[in-house]
Image (cartoon, rainbow, N blue to C red; front, side):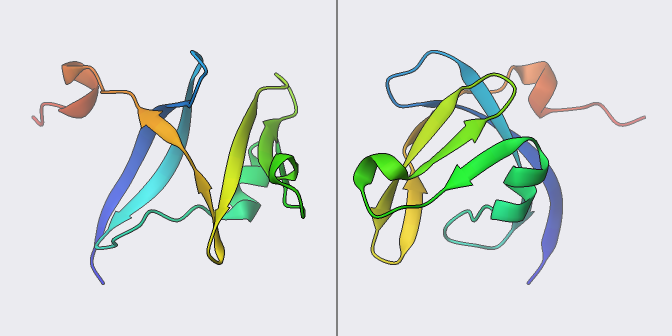
Length: 94
């Protein structure tokens, strides 16, 4: 599988205005995956539980919470992606 670098993705959790970001390694995949250990080392609490309201990621510094929903054997973040400004997307190479 080819690796095409890293990309920071900005998004809003459904129903919230605050823009958050998460880094991803770019590759040939059909669904983006997030490593729980990497989310936790960035200062977040990741919780999975039996109830719908028990599944979330909470930033320990800000208290901001992003809910997750169970879908089959996975947990999903329902988000709205925020488009990057042109200057963020393309960098001139000298």
